[in-house]
Picture 1 (cartoon, rainbow, N blue to C red):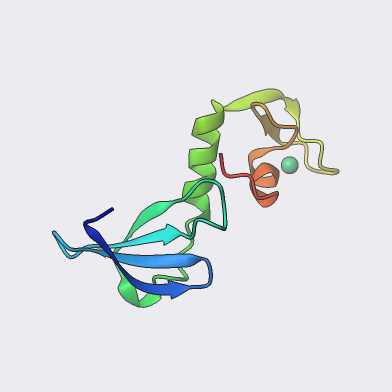
Picture 2 (picture 1 turned 30 degrees about the vertical axis):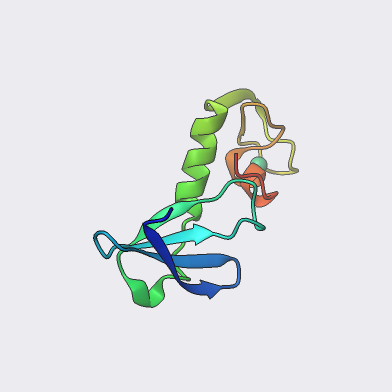
Length: 99
Ligand SMILES: [Zn+2]
């Protein structure tokens, strides 16, 4: 982390610049989620609007070890649950769970 310098903050996101190679990285602020996400930003101009949700959902699924056999308890959903959750990936994510 000492290689990263904070460039800008936007609500719960922080933009960092890595001194060694000049690359930009976006990190979710510590107070937003238990799990912080660091992603590389190629286009600094739109850094705060880049949608990292698909990436975060994928990570969440991998951490939980995949999908279970039961169906999501959200009415009308029916998607398979994430292991250790009563909800599917989409609905687990919607509830703010990130790990
Ligand atoms: Zn669901």
